[in-house]
Image (cartoon, rainbow, N blue to C red; front, side):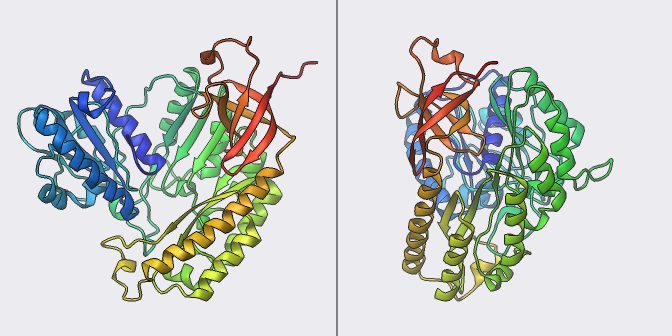
Length: 461
């Protein structure tokens, strides 16, 4: 089980691959596992609270099954290893974000009865993962600047995440990511292309490029900087890859060349997640975001001119220290003006070690929640209006499989990352034959979280 960002999901997959190399296999539940790893996120307080709650539950299981190794990995392991040791001394393994390759050795050490720790700087967000056979304790160490060891050979699947860079150099005053994931480091272009080519040969049709500031790609490459726009162009030419996504770009590094490539490259999807945070220039400056409302809006305008049918999503944070009612209203006004397809909305929570956490003008929790509820209501109304415009249209859907909501329907996502549940003819073959297929779907109903539709046969002639 994993909480947090897509980079954490990728890290969890890598940990699973390292364990499989040791002979472990995925377990159905923690009650049956020999190794349990919690892959954690520290971007907000709520994911951390979930980790502590899960650790309490796992402690009871471990008392009944002493041979089970319990490990905490990811961001919490990177920055809170001492607290983890104090509050949960029964943890066997603590593994920081930049040292996933140390997992096999840590498991061996823990199996010998010793606490195993590997600490190197490279985490991002708060999440936790329970995998079959994982568990290692932390070890203090300096922040690393190299590329984490990873396993590129993976099981065939129709969609895959591919990290292209690690870390962040932006140092926003509210964010702990540079402390958990380290400074920005780019993977060699040749390694990225080789990995994606191998995925394509195994049947992968959609890849999502990952990075804390993914469009900052190109730093610290031994053969010279390769702009992110150029990387997209090279990936676009790989046979078999039908869809290219990326997350999350940073507004300050969103240049015109990249915008042009998104609009012209056939396989780059018409969806951009562009974090805004707030709609007030004074707050953006206090956050150290490096752009203004006007500059952000200029990027949005250029994107919409270059990419017909663009779906734009964002992150919005309410209750940053010192936020006034007028500044909050400025954010609401900008949301109405831009009209995002959807947004990830949350209330600010102080992160230890960040400048914003030290400020005395923290906004009261009840005020933050009231503002957040008002924002959610506004954005939901916009999302519903935008989705309603799709009724009656046909869209391309990459089939993920049988819908979890209705066993009589299939589900998948459009190029604009909108979820579609749809029916197919009963005579069209078993479900497994549809997974990974690109199909046309006629949209019949629109809802806040997606659509209901009906499969349409491919047009011929």
